[in-house]
Length: 350
Image 1: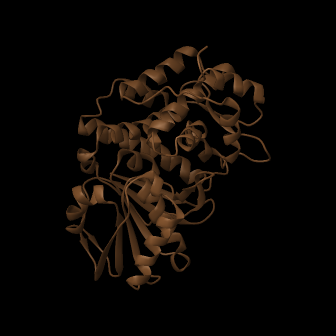
Image 2: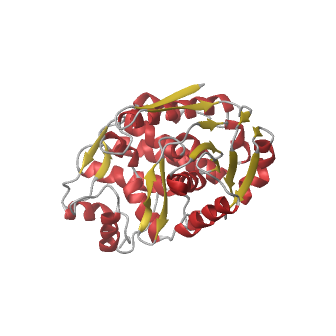
Image 3: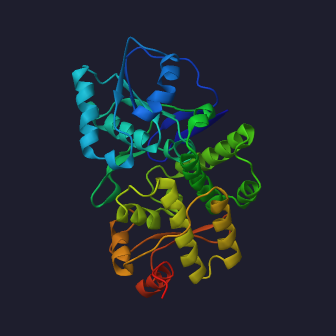
């Protein structure tokens, strides 16, 4: 099963997203696999058995969002210099979204840009993070504020890698699937309400549909000048949750799940989403054991964090909200008092 990416709006780039068992991969240049100890322990031998290259190195970096920073990027770069990689060399991102983001960003920097491919091993990275060329790292000011749009040469999505995924990590990926359905496809949302994602064929269908939707968006808007911003539904709130908890309490998908519930509450306040629709989204998230509650201790401070969001401009916060199930709306003129009223719903109960 192949989903093509064809970016003709900003540059003529074409590559394939392959959803199937990992094929044999032959390269005629130096190759470095970037991974972490967890993924390597489960799957590195499998990958090595599928690759032929004149020189093959493995760069192992620590596991966790807290290591998604410039220091780790420098570690990867130093490994490439040590092994005398050149402009024709190739990187392979082998892991989840953190590995994919950092490998892609490193590829964009090394000698002004070398090729990389994505082999995602988590559900979140298979349905979302590996598709579309967003790369980057976090810093103390927020998430993914340093980075580049840099497209891979190919993406290989093998659902069998998910068999070793812990339940929490799997659920985090489901959050991104729900995001796509709420924003773009009411029928897909209804499919998910009754779907058993422990069935590999059902899961493969869910991955396919999510990737098709993501590809459809990215093909129209590679650099998030328009519709691609809709993919940040739940993220404006979720990134603040992650930042407040120092990226250690919640997985990214868990924070996005909380963020969707918050965004839905704001959409309700504006008359874009009904209470019934908001409850259905919350119920679907909870079906997959995703968190839907968060205690905001300082509403004013939480609100100020919004201005570090990449979608904010000219001191105005852009919110991505559902406009009915399967619909979306970008709103940037919401009065501060309205937003804070909604945030107080998640504050201390008096």
